[in-house]
Each structure stands twice: as structure tokens, then as C-alpha cells.
Length: 185
Image (cartoon, rainbow, N blue to C red; front, side):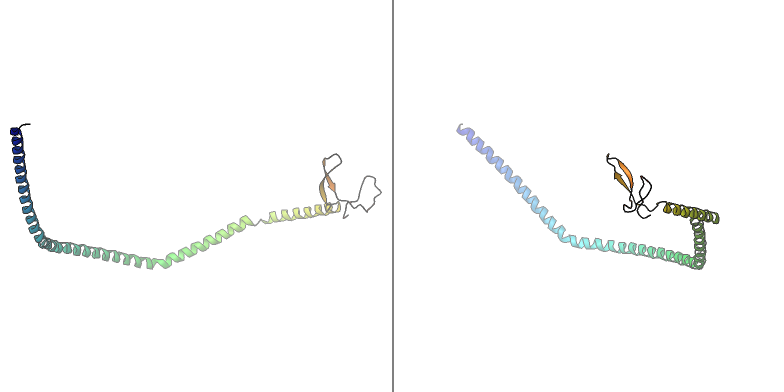
């Protein structure tokens, strides 16, 4: 590199540095102006907010009062309707209670009659059951006389087959060959 190009390059760098410094100073001046304007506006802001709040507050209060009044009017209307409905209900309530009590009694009696008819047998069925009972008692008497109380069990014979066995009285003797006396008879 020669001296001429070095001087030329240094001059160009110096010129660019000076240009950048002017730009930075312009930006700093603009920033200082913006800060001043910001401070002025921020100091004026509470007063402006106060004015806006005052202006909107009275309008909001008026609207809220109107809505509350409308709600009270609606509530009064509903209360009057409820009062009328209560009065009508109070007039008819004893009649309704009496009707419900009478219907309940009627259905209760009808239910008891239906249950009694379906649960208890009629006279013919009772007579038939009494005849059947007498027959069964007679059969029990016959079975008792013929060994109905004998003790029965399942036993194995000498071949290993299951057989019906009866408990016998081994001390009682009989003259019939091949027979034994059943215990308890």
C-alpha cells in the first residue's frame, strides 16, 4: 500500500466517522426533544385522565341508576304477580288437600281390596284345600304305620354298588325268613 492510498483511506474513514457523529447528534437531539415532550405529556396526563373520568363517571352513574330503577320496577312487577298467584293458591289449597286426601284414601282402600282378593283364596279353594289336607293326613297315618319313620341311607353292598338301606333292630327276632324288624317299629 502506498502513502497516498493510506491518506485517502484515512480521510474517508474520518469523513464517515464525522458523518456518523452528526447522525448520532441528530438522533440524540431528537431523543432529548421526545423526552421533553413525554415529560410534558406525562405531567398533563393525570389532569386529562381526571377530566375524562369526571365526564364519564356522571354518565355511567346515570346509566347504572336507570338500570337499577328498571330492575326494581321488574322486581315489583314480579312480586305483585307472585302475590296474586299466592292468593289464588291459598284459596284453592284446602280443596286440593281435601281432594288429594280423598283420592289417597280411595286408592288405599282399593289397593287393600285388590291385595286381599289376590292373596286370600275364595271359599271353594279353602274347602278344596281342607279336603286335600284331610287326605294328606290319612296318607301320613298309613305311611307311619308302614314304616314312614324308618331311617334310610345309601349304602354299598359287597359288590361295591350303592343301595338303599334301612336301619333295623338287630335284637328283635322274626319268624319270617329273609326279613328283619325295622328299628322303631
